[in-house]
Length: 226
Ligand code: ZN
Image 1: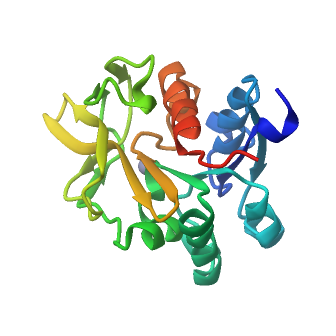
Image 2: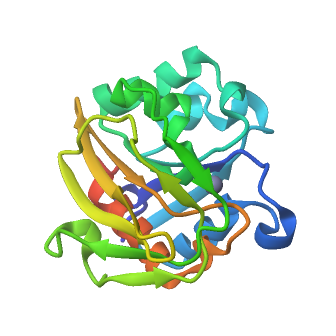
């Protein structure tokens, strides 16, 4: 594959992740996997890097941006969030928001909503990811699977109804459904995917199915590979 055909992926996580679970960060857990794939070239960035890792130059060289944030949402300025959103809507950059990025500034800018949820319970027990759209590109190779431990979230989830709801989450210990386990939106020229699991104290981003979902989402979200 020629270099110009590779999908340029930027994996961003803020850097607050516990080192005993994620070493150098969730970004590296995801990037290490994506780098084994022949069709991607992968970089990582975090809030600790110059320009928070989302400078104009960073974004111009990214086809798909993967975002995990939790306690440092305000490290991103409103201007930077708007710049990310514009790169999606105007240039077709893909944006994949993970777990606690539900209230991140870029996702809120893209969806025009607060992204808030009604509550959390860190010891949520198992999370079943149910495939709702088995024919969808993001569900390729995925059947229903269970993460042994995850954080439970309560609805409502303040986002617009997705164009496509690929997955939903079910927490059997609490008999609770979170309807947007994985959802897709189109915004202008770009595509947005949100995926619910990924609490930082659990090794979710080492799970084979989760990594496959993220891989599929990158390939779905890319519109104009360089
Ligand atoms: Zn969490």
